Image (tube, one colour):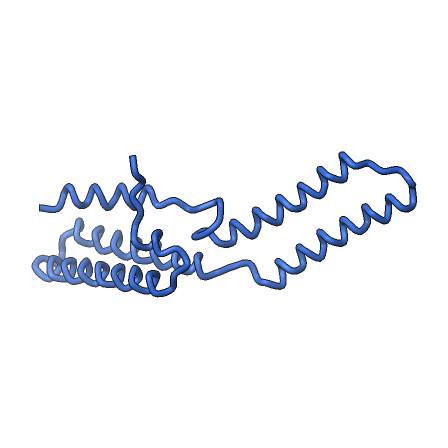
Length: 152
C-alpha cells in the first residue's frame, strides 16, 4: 500500500512548497474559524460550542508548535563543538597509542564508530524533514480521513 503524505510533508526542504502548504493550512484554519463563528453567533450559550472553540484553538496551537519545532535547530556552534570534541577524543586515543606502544584496533574502531554514529543521529534528529529518521504524520492523516468521511 502506498503511503499517503500531506503536502506539508511532501514539501521536504523546498521553501516554495513549504510556503504553499502553510498558506493552505492558514486558509483551512480561516475557514474553520468562519464556520465556528457563524455557529456560535446563532447560539452563543451552548457548552458544546465552547468546547469546539477550545479544540480549534488547541489544533491551531499544535500546528504552530510543529512549525516552530521545524524552524528551531541545534545551533551551528554546538554542532561544531561536537565535531571538535570527537576529533579531540580520537587525538587522545592516537596519543595513547604513541605512549604505550600497544595498539588496540578493535576498541579504537568501535569507539570511532560510536562517535560517528552519535554525531550522525544528532544531526539527523535536528532535521526531521530530511535524513534517515523522519517524523511521521500518520495521526494527522487518520484525522483528515475521519473528517472527510464525516463531512456531508
